[in-house]
Image (cartoon, helix red, strand yellow):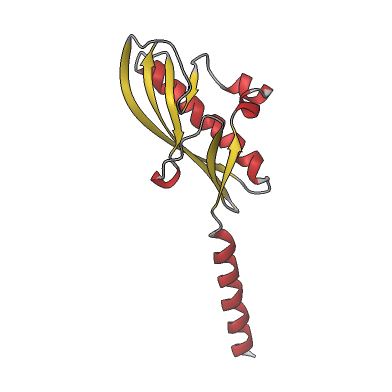
Length: 143
């Protein structure tokens, strides 16, 4: 009986570890997210330009910054958790721009697990059973 209990416990622990280790990397559209009321209320009035989107001429440049945000993904769809954490990451870039005296963030790209993904239409998000994360890299400028 002790052997059976030990085997059952060991199997349970391995199963829990495998479930917690899920880290699916998904790609999600940027523009539909930015058009939501959630984005309009969460984000600041600092323009965001993704990948090679064109913008006005720079009068000054602070340089490149990185943000890496996580959120609780428990009992949420991957998309729901990823959208929430993407808004958090974008807001962090906007706040940093303001802090450094800049007024726009350009060349925004995904940088999840330090892997560059450059797109003007999509971002990458890592979603697990408990946590979802978005890392972004962008350049702070004054237009």
